[in-house]
Image (cartoon, rainbow, N blue to C red; front, side, top):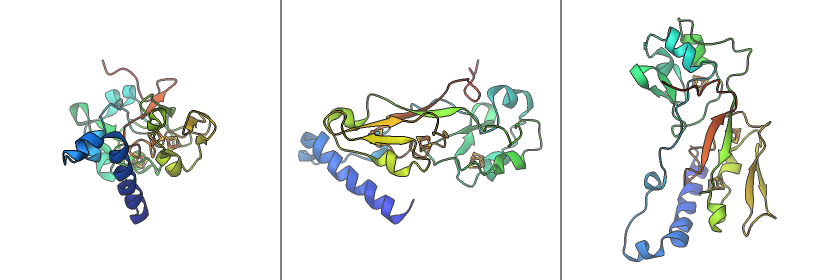
Length: 191
Ligand code: SF4
Ligand code: SF4
Ligand code: SF4
C-alpha cells in the first residue's frame, strides 16, 4: 500500500469515527479497522483452479502459497490453497499455476475464474456516509459512482468489466463487498 493510500485510510477512519460513533469517541474508545471488518468472504480457490481440481490433484505441498507474490494464498482445508482477499488482490500473474507440478490448474489461456464483485446493503453510502474508496482502487473501472442516487450517491458494479481481482474487497472499511461466482467455477460446495 502506498503512503498516499495509507493516508487516505487514516483520514477516512477519522471521519468515519466522527460520523458513526460519537458516543464511543466521547468515552475515549478506539475503533480499529480490523474491528470494523468482518470475515464474511466465501472460500475461494486460486485462479484457474476449482474445488474439484484441488480435491482431485492437490497434494497440499504449499508451493503455490509460497509462490504468490501478493500473499493472498493461504492454507485452507487440509492445507490446500484458498484465496484471502483481505491480504490483497490477484494480479493474475500465474505464478501459482506455473509452480504447481500436479494436474490442478487449467490453461492460463482460459478465463481464470468467474468471480465478480457485489455490494452489500452495509455499504456506507446507504447510511448517508460519503465514501468511494472502492472505486478509487478498481483499475478496470468496474465500480461506477452514481452521484445522483440516494443522498450521497451509490456505487454500481459493471459485471462485464469486473475481473474479480478482489482489490476492492480489503479496501472497504465495513466489508460491504463480496465476490461471488455465477457459474460456480471456483466456489463449488466444499462438501
Ligand atoms: S495469479 Fe498470481 S497473484 Fe493471483 S493467486 Fe496466483 S500467484 Fe497469487
Ligand atoms: S473485483 Fe477488481 S475489477 Fe471487480 S470491482 Fe473489485 S476492484 Fe474492480
Ligand atoms: S462498498 Fe465499501 S468502499 Fe465502496 S463505497 Fe461502500 S462503504 Fe465505501
